[in-house]
Image 1 (cartoon, rainbow, N blue to C red):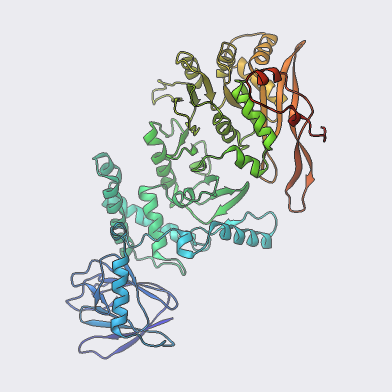
Image 2: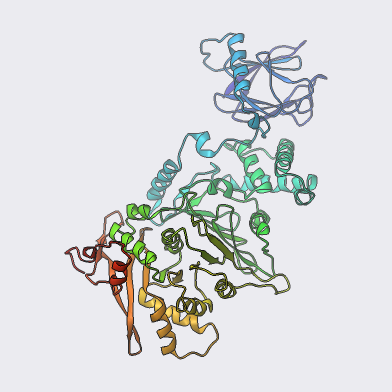
Length: 600
């Protein structure tokens, strides 16, 4: 508890005690510290009190707020020291700590405040006082320490408990009250500002953000609902600003590079994935409308829409992260949002080797397969890392060749110069104007491509892809959903049939056997790690069956006591049938990598 001394002209000196919380100081009737004097504004200043610290914000008063003789800039936060003198009009408020440390003289204190003013950067001066630094910076904690704490808490509660990451610092017990405060603030914000209209009218993003920050700050100052214990007004204001002009609580999560997946199951349930483990966060949206607003901010710049007539959408963020959204009536928990994040710096093949997803020998073999223009399919389940592996294999493509990429939502991050990126388009509100992956594959054949990279085959475009591979477009790459290389062949047959042609099964299999050379199977294991479990070659047709031979496999040996998978990638001893092509290409692949003595 902090003690203060209040001195007013013509009145007796008063001793006050402040418990942690937010206090408005002024002459108005809503002020917590009421100073009814003509030179003091109705809402003059704000005190933010912790156990042994007091911070001061001037709220745009007419006569200013002073600490030890130094006038504070409007709407900026300043820390006081024990024995500091805060002057508001003719009233002096002196900080009195329970145990007074050695007293600093007024000159030293004034110099400290002045130095703080001088070290504020110009761009920070324009920002709202209630926009605190990122959580990790403010608390001095990294995401790793937050995760360690969450894991320890979950272990104490039981192995079935989902660990909770304390990102916002607002617990479940006080979150309902915080949500109520945010709802009221949002309602008032909509009355005072029409952000959509301002954006449409051409208002710059900076001006829009500044106006929203100022208005939200004013609204929170006027709210009559008391803040719950331990919750700072800066935290609520930061969440409100993000929801008004950004993506709400997702803003902080997107900025954490270690998080690979963000999952929103309605406004109050936000989950993330880190290194294959699911965590619940203590962040939340104000209500369903705010989740929907965040989704609209993502999809609108891409020319896509989401409403009751089109309640599902695929999109991407500016950094290429994949986004899927689904809203009521299809989603019964409210608007649901899933963001698959991609690293700012794309993973390289050496990273996969370091993570144990494959070995140097396997990487060397895949590099050679791309360079000798073998058609490759990457097979795997949802979240297994197909797109990441496709991106890495695409990096092996020569810079001098023309590459055409075709995707539902553009997410490949190729570094070559000669690239044409194509993206499908959903139908408009009238159900017209759709451009499917299949249309783009057919169009790409007229674009003189050296290589065609299809993000994923999931429909009739599989037939067009096979035909392209069989008519001179060697070295093409794509992905497919399947659990094993053999399942990938069966899945491919099904997709070809989806093209609508009544083709004999043998004809389809012959197309596959002549078009595809290598299948790379990648799986996500139970412990969250990704492993390339098979690199298999399609050899030929035997009767009605397509024959496969495994070149490399992942041989699982068991699990550690900590639940981590144990095993090793081993060559099977089978030699690729296109070794002669590799030799003629002068790529220098040592045949010994296919047999290291351990066998299958």
